[in-house]
Amino acid sequence: MRRLLIPLVLTGLLAAPAPAALAPASAAPAHDAADAARTETQTRARAAAGRLDGVRVDLRKGTRQVVTVNRTSGYHARVTLWAKQGGKWVQRFQTTNGRIGYSGLVRPRKRVQGSGKTPLGTHRLPWAFGMNAQDDRWDPSYRRVRNGDYWVLDNQSAYYNRYRNKSQGGFRWWLPSSHPDSSERLTDFRRPYEYAIVTSFNHQQVRHRGSGIFLHVNGRGATAGCVSAPRWLLRYLVRVLDPERKPVIAIGR
Image (cartoon, rainbow, N blue to C red):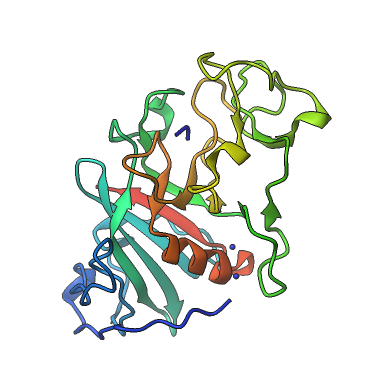
């Protein structure tokens, strides 16, 4: 695919011993067969050389929430949520059932639309959208998908890499999916976009670099450039990611 909340009652969580210099934490017993590493830990360690779980993180001023994506093999990745407390980074949750693009990773400036590659680096996580009605406790920037909503991939449009309804015009929403400039009709992706978080990749709208790079719910396999993770984690992230904490996603290998 081209491509912040309701507290969760979590069971089966296992505290892991504090690793040295942010080495990967021990996985908890599987909560279910599809997710062998759902875990909340009390791991506390100082960020070393701007890395968390081996992934380089370019922190923004005031950033206190980080999602790291560490490619493990093929299109699989370890996705971890971190929070800064008392000057230390605390691992909150981790899954080994993350996914990246079917063609692997690429430096952001080298990415090409339709390549199936996920952009490396650190990107902001400014807001979320999804298929569910907004909960009062979610951030008000959340947007519920409506009929006619698209993510614009039309390189000729001033709204390239923007969320827009076809009734607003300004992009060729009618182009068939086989066309390289066809946009994503969001209601066609109800499963992966049940919970989706926008990244700031290519916010500058460089044409042909790629549009619609999100953090969203796992589909059946690799993504077309986004990062995906199990539904339970995305549902949690949509609740807890707070714009005032300036959350970012850091993608590495």
